[in-house]
Amino acid sequence: MEEMVVEALLFGDGQAQLLAARQLAQFSSKQRHNIAEKGVVPPLILMLNTNDFEAIEAALFALLSIAFRSERNKILIAKSGAIPVLLEVLRCENRLLVELGVAFLLTLSSCGSNKLAIAASGAIPLLLELLNSQSYNSMSLQANLDILSALHNLSTCHQLIPSIVSYGGVATLLGLINLASELVMEKAVALLENLVSSSRTALEEAAGTGGAIQCFVEAMEEGSRQCKEHAVAILLLICDSCRDRYRGMILREGAMAALLQLSVDGTKRARDKAKRLLLLLRDCSNCVQTTKQTKNIVLLEQIMRQIEQGVGDPAGMSVALLEEMISKLRT
Image: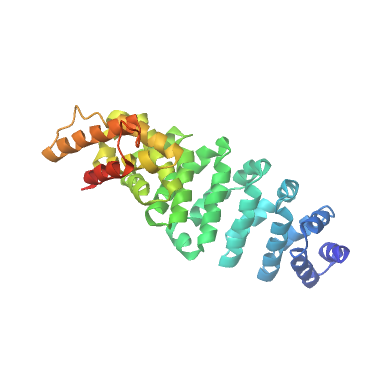
């Protein structure tokens, strides 16, 4: 059966290649590995460069199955010229093919050897374009998650972060945080943290965008545990970059209650980031204070002392009592 598939892909007509590509996608991992070594990748790539949607779909499934869990095959596929052809698939008007193409690009981007080649082919602006509101709403949740994951894979190569930023990555991600589902929000905030932690330009853009700080505070309040962790890390980076400039902005967005809550029940990393940010925010000596603000500051100092002593320690207080005090800050 393997030999018949190889022969059909190498020498068959269009219909024979279509059937062979479909058959290949059903083979075992070992069979796919053997077939990849027999030169079937180039004809499968050629199938992507046709106007036959069925052929393109079959070729994408076949190439995906060849690349699955094989770094060697991912490199082979990229070196065989698949990336530029794949980007043309992403520009087509068939949503199913675009989503398959995104999944394939995600698979290729997981290989470190392919990241620079993917970026050089123009993938970054195209992926960001697919995340704009019109395209975002027309694609499935999984496709949007795949796009964000592919961009995250590329962002782990620090040489590529300036490109993601220069093509509007920060603004695109901030837009997603405002309208996306919880899963998309989590991935968007995670990618944004990766950008702002590595690029001063990205950090300044994120900090200076209207509504961005409010966005991160809301992510701390309403996001998943991982989303809260990334959001508080971004706020800490922003405040630490210029405390005098951003401290008041963060306070005005009502971050304190969410930070205190995170310092108690967030992930280990979130707790650490929240406590560090609280230390940057707690000095109110230069603030013009209302009566309510004064009461809140006194309450905040009490809570901070309890957190520093250790919640649940004999000298401290119970988590329940601490949460009751935090709730007062929300009112």
